[in-house]
Amino acid sequence: MPSDRAAKIGIIGAGSVGATIAYAAMMRGVARQIALFDIASAKVRAEVLDLNHGMLFAPPGALEGSDDIEVLRGCDVIVMTAGAKQKPGETRMDLAAANARICASLLPKVVVVAPNAHLLLVTNPVDVITQIAIKLTGLPWNRVFGSGTVLDSSRFRFLIARHCSVAVQNVHAYIAGEHGDSEIPLWSSATIGSIPLSQWAVEGHGRLTSVDKDAILHDVKDAAYQVIQGKGATNYAIGLAVTNILEALVHDEHRVLPLSGMLRGFHGLDDVCLSLPRIVGRRGIEPPLPIPMTVDEEAGLQASATRIREVVQGLGY
Ligand code: NAD
Image (cartoon, rainbow, N blue to C red; front, top):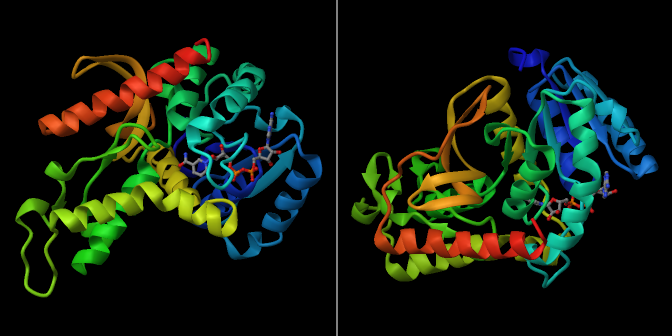
């Protein structure tokens, strides 16, 4: 991966998520080149025109797009967003078969045009798709990972911050496991300004009762369903979350992010992709951090792993 802004970022899928990632990455000047690929030629052409018409107002860079996969040649990071999205009432797991088929037809070609790229999966169900992508590409585990629960953790931190009237940046808390219905909140390691959340009792800044915690978790899990019900897709927060991951990779930041990646002997878990906080830099992801967990949190992680593994195996991978 070249240093800093010399990197080329590819985005597969110019739909709601892919186009918003391109916009957010362009606005933040993450890379010198951004390339969008989509089989919908008119759509990708229109998104690229619209984005390029705003280039004057963004940090210098170049943006191109095509329905020809050659546009991704030489990318340093490729973000996969192509595929079916949830319709109101559908779970992410309902998308597994359709999106696994798209990956099977696409990812082997992607590796040919960009053999050195890191592959960042966003397409849902993201843990299942990440695990399948590792098999399909044969790339090392540190270079194939999913956006995982970065978005869920951001929703979690936002809701805790709002409840306690503190800045979201001062809340440290993670959602782990599946990016989906079996995800688990790691309450026991959550802090605000270095104070464990369980001890948070600051006048004028509320406390978190078990009822509050249940309500927050409900809202985290229900967030995508609520947004999809109202506007058909989630795009802004995932656009910013993915841009944050891209910055960690391209700028070699060693940022701690809950990305979905292959587990090898973590708390007895093997051969399954799910999210846990990991250090992220130019070489991709590192193994999960040894984050302390309660017995219940650990049981939740195991249940999440079982659910992901069952779906992957059901698809024949
Ligand atoms: P969308 O329908 O707006 O866009 C999908 C795009 O993929 C379309 O433009 C389509 O033409 C393209 N596409 C389909 N098959 C293709 C192929 N074979 N090659 C190239 N392009 C192809 O959907 P969206 O709202 O952008 O969502 C995309 C995916 O991202 C969905 O699976 C959704 O569930 C997922 N998502 C993930 C997260 C997360 O946190 N991981 C958050 C939001 C959405």
